[in-house]
Image 1 (cartoon, one colour):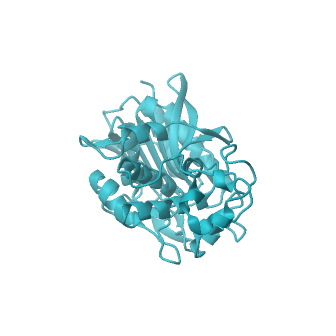
Image 2 (cartoon, rainbow, N blue to C red):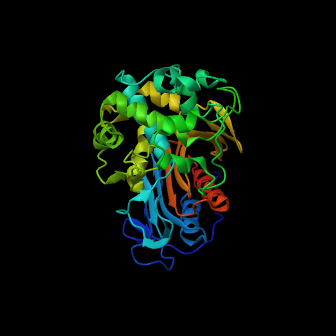
Image 3 (spheres, helix red, strand yellow):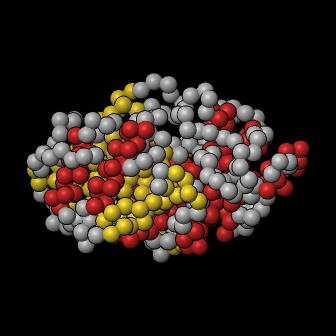
Length: 369
């Protein structure tokens, strides 16, 4: 999970828009607002867009927004596969194509948790998880009894859980799709570290939070997302996949159009407000924008959000991001009032993820005022 070296081609400006023609089908290309740079260096921004279009990495979509305005929107054809598929298929991505967001789903689930918390429908962050599950009383040993809601959100439960090997059979996430009790499956694991001490990426915690959220709000995760988050944002074309037992995949199942995902990024920059209405409590947004635990590779982690820094405008700028396997990215840079969305099909490909993160850094560096 890390962040394209530019290749330069000419741009043909057509009216108010620039179309990058790079050998893809006519529906592919980059539309950029000309005459309104929104503080970007236009030459360097075009270089970044051409890098997206011509890079050999399996990139699918790119949306750049600044000051609430779409500055660029780009799409390419590429191979992809859904969370349930074993086989790649080629798609011609365009603005109307929904894309798997994989673990970006976790960050959206966190926003929903924050909404539910403001409605007093979910336990507080300091609530001990196993105290809320009397059926698992036998697992309240060896430090498991100290794991709180906050630890699940920060992925500092201390439970032995390793998703670093990709999506093979050895990945414990696979068991979440079919185990009858996801909570028992998670808490039955040995403690590797005391709760709250160290970061370990863990989709099992998100699955448990999803079940608690659904119980608290009295409706399914997709229904709650529709009524409390997506409908207020005007997002109507999306889906949330379920596991083999019909439980929504709060940790991996969201599918959405890149431009709609950018709305969620803008919502963060607006501290949870949209069209004059508070959608997500500002206190939860502010808390979500704060790094809380070192997560390796120079990253930090918070309430299901990643945190880091990038160079722009002569200094370091803090960013907050949702990451998904394959190169899915939603990145907001509050100091630049910037939102960047990337979709891709490079699943379990560390080199591909590095290319995506380099592309983000290249885009951020083009902001000059």
